Length: 331
Ligand SMILES: NC(=O)c1ccc[n+]([C@@H]2O[C@H](COP(=O)([O-])OP(=O)(O)OC[C@H]3O[C@@H](n4cnc5c(N)ncnc54)[C@H](O)[C@@H]3O)[C@@H](O)[C@H]2O)c1
Ligand SMILES: O=P(O)(O)OC[C@H](O)CO
Image 1: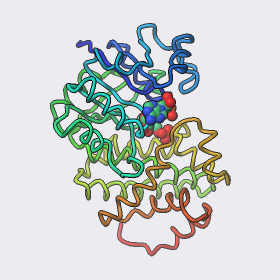
Image 2: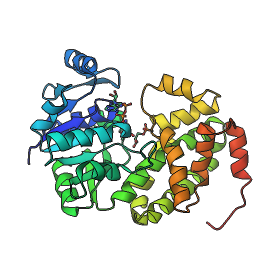
Image 3: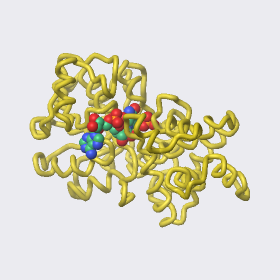
Image 4: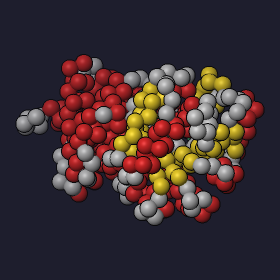
């Protein structure tokens, strides 16, 4: 077994869960940007704000100093919301230009619509040693050691295979893949569709409607991914169908919970205030509509979510009626 020094950036639910899981076999340091939050983790040996009821092992180091975390690590794992990836990659370029970087954030960058690997390439240059960790994985379950399987995708197959082997554990299974675009599109768009599934379930549309939504949603994801150069089979795997099913059906999903609350008539501001976590589907819904239209890809479900979240005050029922009145096409 090879032991590595791993720096995890982002002390929210997912960063904490991954730090905990990897600390079973590696030397892990967890960085958070808020010194007071890190002080509370140090004092209580738990992350009561983002991942309650899970004790942090004594072997897990904690810091609010970015350079301290970055300096000695063999692997830099960025698990901030997507909004923090550009800044983290830029800081790594300055402190550790030789970085091996994996990110676990999902989404399209607000404003630019860029995928995570495009952000990283702009910050670190095109030849950086890097990849994305994604797939069906609720932090609370990984933190409890429940069996989980995810994808590590990198355009350099050797990087994906090497780090998948190093990070793999029996209860956190890691499958290597070389399709970064497919893996990232799967992870980004399933969050938008989970909001739709929450709305549908919250309005009592039933199990048939949810199955239709997941299936037609997967078709939307695959159309966009292939238009951008991804592979259709990636979307049949963990990073696509696997994560879509989990997030559309599992009530641990923050994105699904946004949809459930919209169906109750709550406003987006109220919902995000109460959630206390990031729900990446909210900003990704805006960006995916622009990206899809730029590539001539039809994504009616994602467009409906965007209308509901950011549009001209149509309620869930009107948006669903609009969708149902569309002319059916070939499957
Ligand atoms: N929670 C999960 O189950 C899960 C699983 C897989 C992937 N993800 C992805 O991981 C990413 C992080 O999710 P999370 O669940 O940990 O979120 P979270 O809301 O639980 O925590 C976010 C953390 O990041 C910090 N933060 C916010 N903006 C930041 C920024 N600009 N720079 C640095 N830190 C910042 C917050 O202070 C907080 O500590 C998201 O992209 C999410 O889609 C989450
Ligand atoms: O809670 P969500 O909706 O952000 O989903 C968490 C993970 O992405 C599930 O794989």
